[in-house]
Structures are given as structure tokens and as C-alpha cells.
Image (cartoon, rainbow, N blue to C red; front, side):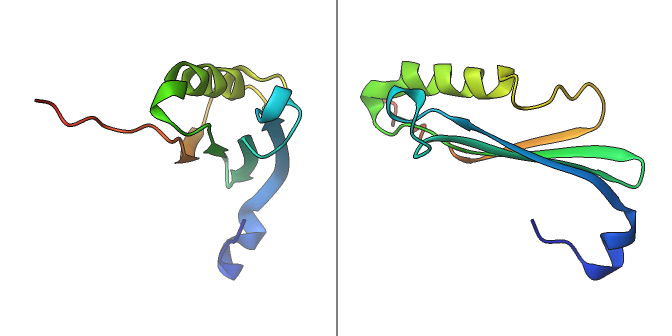
Length: 96
């Protein structure tokens, strides 16, 4: 995480965690990293995901994102801002 020097005095309670969703859910080649912090009085969490690729693995991706968001490792955020981003590997199909 990078922050402007001027914001450092109002950033506190920085926490990080990760969820492995790779081969046998043991390798970290797929999954998510979470970083949360307070900026002033607001709790903010960033989740960066990298999910399984390929059209044939759509159910796996959906299950992976569900597991990431429901993971006990990633703290429950009831108030504040949550941003989930990354390489979800979902593709849009051209309609005919």
C-alpha cells in the first residue's frame, strides 16, 4: 500500500490477510489479499483478487469469490468502505 506523506498521520489500525484459492486451496497462486485501515474515522478495506481463468471455470470463480468474501481470515466490515478489485477472469460473451 502506498499513501501520500500528508495522510500518514491519520492512517491507523493497518491490518492485512490473505486467502489461498489455488490448487487444492493450498497454493497462493489464486486467491485474495486484504488490507484494511482507518483513515481518519473511516474504516477502509481493499481486497485484491486473482481468480481461476477460463470459460469452463465460471462456477469455480463464483465459489472462490464467495469464499474470499466469507473468509474468517478477512475481518467482518460492518461499517466503512470496502473495495474489491483485481483479476476476476470473468469474460463477457458477444451476444448473437
